[in-house]
Image (tube, rainbow, N blue to C red):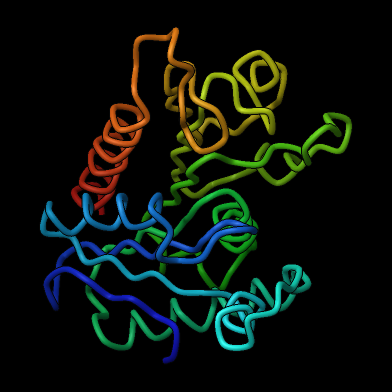
Length: 217
């Protein structure tokens, strides 16, 4: 399958599939950091690009994200491919911002993916569009059954700690807050923290979650 980056040991007991956010590709510094951290722990990591991002890469023309049905169907295709190659793996799905949101919609559907996916990880969930806090993207999160980890910056403009405290989220969802982080987890200098520290904390939270989900199966 084109436009896929796969790293980590073949036949690994855990596989993490990560999708990119709306504006940056699968090999952005953020995505590279998370993939490197995952594979360093002996976990297989698969990254892929949605069709519009593939077109950006091949044609050099900036295109908006595909419609939601196309994004969801892309996810199904990559999950099917991973499970064909390693049917016994504990599968964690998720991604950066939009990529994680699409994955959350996928696993919230009844039936098809109920037994395929061990867990969901959202790296900076876009609870609402920028500057539009009234347009919430949380309805399906209230009834989520798949164990879910949302790693979120304290001051994320698409859902900060204060905002999220007012939302109704399923008991299956855990939110791990990164100190003073923005939507890409970058803190301000005055916080005394670095972007690298927040990224690494996020990786460690992801790995702890993935291992827990594997052992719970």
